[in-house]
Length: 194
Image 1 (tube, helix red, strand yellow):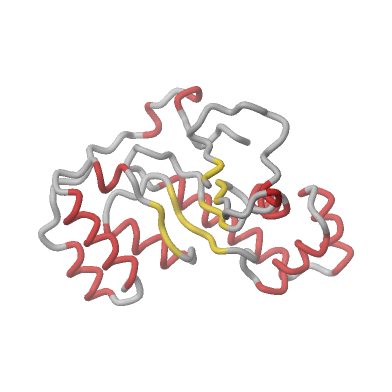
Image 2: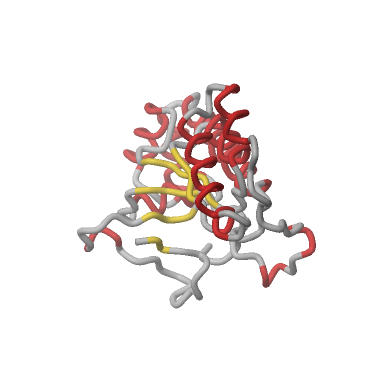
């Protein structure tokens, strides 16, 4: 289940207690504090909250880099500093300690929002996520099956430049991108569900 920021928020103060469900939840997070709060609520997967439907990957990249930087900072902290971070993030200190020890999120982490082609997919994989969510980037292209295959190949072989190049050849026309700078704050999906 995707506890999605794309949907209208029904409760602005509380998120679904995901531990009561037998199916896994994926939740959006644009920084480490959000990710750890969702994990503490029972999320099995975390995804970036890039600007969905735009074909503009900049926000997803920003969220990945910020979260990785925050995890790196945790890994250098003494235990008393980790306790302070746990209070700041409003999560159990054990979760903060585990994240610091692993030097990554303790659940699978996906990039989502703005991924419009194989190069985008390879980029976010190289930045350190475990996989990608793609919707509009496939279905708004002129040949969705071909675009999907190209994105899958680039994701699978993200660390092989020749394979990524091959995936980028003879692509269908991609989705028409939207410059997120032209969106009003109320139109941005990534800021919902904070």
